[in-house]
Image 1 (spheres, one colour):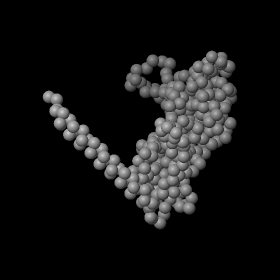
Image 2: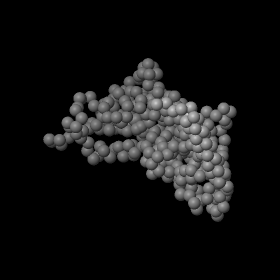
Image 3: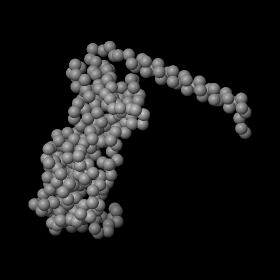
Image 4: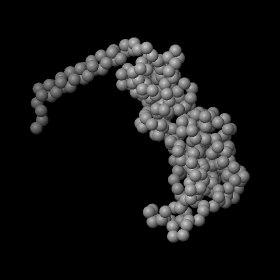
Length: 321
C-alpha cells in the first residue's frame, strides 16, 4: 500500500525539521567548543590541514588550544579531544592506542613516530606541530596514502615458501632456539612506515628503492645456504621495480631457516637500487618507534648480495620430530 501524498509531504517536513535541528545543535556545539580554554596549562597544537576534494583548498597549519589538565598524556589524546570537542572534521588514523598497530604514524615536532606513544611536550610556551608522514600523497589532513607502501610489501611475498609439498598441520617445521633468535629485531616491525618516510633515498627513489621497512622484512628469508653470485638481466630488474621499497621487510624472509626460496628472493633485489641505494644515513634506526635497526638489516642484505656472507644450512630436526 502506497502512502498518500499528504503523508509523503508530512514525512518530508519532519525530515527537514530534523535536519535543521541537528544542524542547529552542531553549530551550537561548534560555538561552545570555539571558546578558548581557561586552564593554567594551555598548550597550542599546530596541525596540518588539507582536503584535496575541496576546490581551491590549500595546505595550512591550524592552531588549537588544549588544556593539558583536561587531556591525556599522549599526542593522540590531544587529537581525539580536538576531534570530539573542537573540530569534528579533523581527520587522522588510529586504532590500538598501544603502539602495536602502526595506524597513527605521523610527523610530530619534526620526527616520525606514533601519536599514541608520543608524550605531549609539557612546555606550554612552545607549540607542537603535527604533520602527516613526509613525502607521501595526502588523502586528507593527517592521513597519508599507503597504497604504494603496501603494494611494495606484498611484492616481496612476505610468507614462508617451501619447495617440498606439505599438507598444513601434517608436520611441524622445526626451528631451533638459535635459529629463532635470528628473527629477533625483524618480525616486530608493525609496518607504520616511519622509517621509510624518514629516509632521503626513499623520498627521491620511491619507485625503485624498497626502503628500510620492506628490506628489514625481506632479510628474514634470504639468509642463503648457497647463492651463485651472478648479474641479473635488465628484464628481471624492470619487472621487479615495484618491490624496491620493501627492503627492510625482505630481510626477515631471507634468514628464516624454514624458508626454501632464499636464492630466488635475493635475485629479485639484485640491482643497483633495491638495497644498494641505502647510504647508511641511519634516519630509519633513529626514528623507529619499536626501536628496531633497519640499517643493520640492510647491511646484512648487502653482504649476501655481494657474496661476503651466506645463509647457514638449517639444523637437523630431532629424531621422531
